[in-house]
Length: 169
Image 1 (cartoon, rainbow, N blue to C red):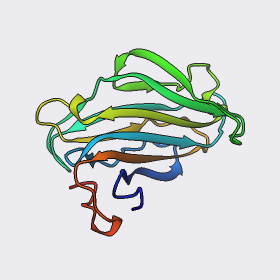
Image 2: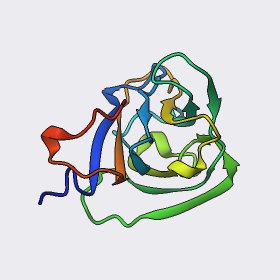
Image 3: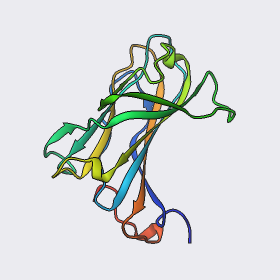
Image 4: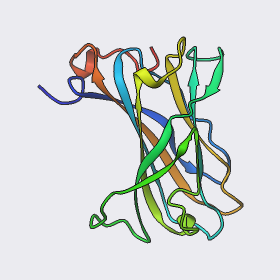
């Protein structure tokens, strides 16, 4: 059996886009999964246009109540001028918050290509909340491409990919 549908499902937070404008991440449900690995990938940009992110929880697939999900006490990052496969993961720690400002904290994140990973367990959501999203802040006045992918894992019901429930369900 293939891994898609058995081990994980995928959904988009935002498609690759010029991130100089803030991005409101699409919502994804954790009702049918044990957790979600959020992967953000970005191209190198102009100095000073450093990326920031904000993790949210929601009570509904649209509308409803939205609140910060203040659980991000660490994240993983691969960063280089050009990502070419020789990078290793660096673990970055911070006080638990919903925000990550200037990923990597070196003051040069805008000038690097990056892959950033945040882990969310479904049991970390507050009572009554079933959905999450990741937003990206506006990143200055220069073009800088980024995208976000949600990897839902520990699926409660395993199916062939064509029979998976929609990630917003």
